[in-house]
Structures are given as structure tokens and as C-alpha cells.
Length: 439
Image (cartoon, rainbow, N blue to C red; front, side):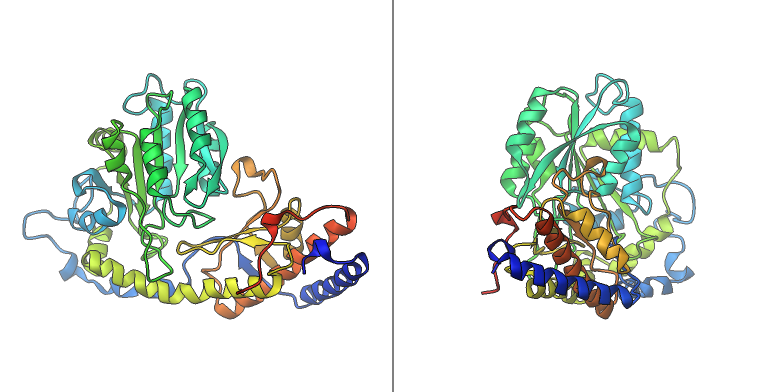
């Protein structure tokens, strides 16, 4: 049974029942948070042994490099070796820098705005600059563009990456379109993993802008939830193969691997792009925190150590995502009021409610003490044209709190949908809003 096939009398009864359930939810005085994708305390505890490394471990290296001193702008090669395979960047084209990949993306775009990038005819801020933004997408990417005055052009996100017909059409027709945001592995928030064909079309893209860049934010490259890890295509190799070696800028970090506030960020690109960025970085720093990088290298040891560490993360996270799936399926499955993604990794679940109901759902949830990411946050300028997407972040709350929050959220989704049907009873629920019952 879906709401679209339910009699008006039964809909009225269901609306009263759901309103009563919501009033009872409000009366509980909850204070629950599903907003940001933060590691839980248990995840952070996995890296606590890294703090036990003492002065004897972190002292001067025998080869003469003293990591306590100035220098080393490109970061420790020992750590770059560990992450080179995960990010699919050759070691000599990978930089290990400060603690935040977001800060690194910010600095990269600021340098592009002020000076342009290799191949630019002008700085990106000297006139109109537009950036393609797959949606739903990462709100902080959009915040960076808005802060710098870059126009954002939404393109639809598919299960294997952005709608490449749309991307190719826009980029070929507009020389001021200079970049596209990509989260290729377990994309934020849908969990999409870019396919080989998508990456190949991005690499071969006939962009009108000679300095077009792929902003390849591989934040969840090693954050898998299943026994079959996803792997993003090798965008550097594909772009080189198609004659555009300078096109991709690859970003990553350990923020959700070790300590979110004390990690290491990575930048990978062509030799020309690496030289371009280090040339600008040299004006603002003599080198990153090499002792923190050394701690990470000693703690993770090698690529196998990184995989083992992420297996421990997966053991903590998988039950949370299974819980979200179970509650959504049990409470909303088959009603035709919600559709959601079932990610194989990453930190989020993307929930679609009926058109026009996302803001009301978030408002109802707030009234019941359940904080959600603002409706519209996953779209440029905070505006979801269909007002339907909600991003769920299940990683931080304790399991019992997560279950309470999800149970409450489903009440809010159903009530918002029933209110809408009462206001416009002739509305037809779209097929893509229907969630089939479990097999």
C-alpha cells in the first residue's frame, strides 16, 4: 500500500495517528544530532596509540633529516608512500601538507582566483568563472565557490557519477566553466562511486576553457562498509592518456582515518600543478608539521596497515548504516513517501522525500529535538529546486541515540507527506519516490 492508493478516510486517520506519534515524540524532550559526518569517539579511540609515540621515536632521522626543524615543504615521503596507492597518485606527484583537505582546497582555489592555474589566460577572479556542481553534493564545496564569487552550475548526479551528457554539453559551450567538483568514491551524500566510463569522459572532455580542472576530492577513498572495497578510476592516468595531464587536482586526508582535528591532508596532480602549488605555498610556509606526519607514518606503517586500520573503522560503522537501512525500510518502505541510497561506504545516507517536503521534515524534526543538516544544503546556494533531499549523518551518535533519531525522523517524514496530501489531495506520488518492500 502506498499513500497514493489509500482512501481519503484512511489518510485522515493515518494523519491523526501520525500527529499523535509526533506530539509524543516532542514530549520526550530529545536532543539528538544527525548533522555533520564526524567520527564517533570509538573511532577516534582507534588512533589513540599514536599519541604514545615518544621523543625516541620522533627524534632526528639517521639520514640527517631532522623532522623537528624547518623544511620539507612536500611532506614526508614515508607517509606519501602509504597513501599513494589509495589516492592513485605517484609518490613524487603527491604532497603531504597540513591537517585539512578543505583548507587545501580553499588555498588552491584562492591561488587560482588570484593567479590562475597552469594554462590560464587570466586569473579566475578577473571576470566570470563558473564551476560545475554535481547534485546532491558536498555543502562545503559550494560554500568555497560562493565565498570566492564563482558561479555554480548544478548537474545531476547518477549512481556512477555526474550526468556526463550534461557536463560535456555545458563545458564545451562555455569557456568560463573552469572546473567540476567530484567526490569519486562513496560520494557525499549519495554514496555514488564514479565509473571508469565517467572518469574517461571527464578526462577526454572537450572543454572550451583551456585551464579546465577536475577538483577530485577523494575524501572517502578508503572508507568502505563492505567486504568488496570500491575503487575510483585512476583519473591522473586517464587525463594523461587523453592529452590533459594538468586537468585533475586530487585531494585527500586522514581526517576520518586518525584524528579529525589533527590529521594530514594530501594533494596530487601533474608535475606542473605540483610545482605551481608548491611555488605558492613557499610564500606562506617553510614546511608542514612533519612530526605529526611522522607519527602517522609510524602508526599506520604501510598500505596494509592502513587497510587493517580501516577494517577496524568499518566494524564500528557498518552496524550504524545497517540500523539506518532497517529503520527506514521498516517504517517507510512501501509507503511511497521516501527513497534512499544504500551506500557501500562513506559517511552519509541520502534520503529523498516527496517534492516540497524536505524543509517541512527538517522543521518537524527540529521541533522534536532532532537536528538535521538544513534542507537544501546539498545544493548550490542552499536551494534544492525540488525541496526533497535530506542528508543523514549516522556516524557520530551512539547506536541507541541513532536509533531514536531515525525512528523520530521517520515520523517526521510521514507527517510532512500526509500534511502535503491533505493540502493537495490530488497530488500523484512519483514512482521514484516508492520504496519496494523487502524481498
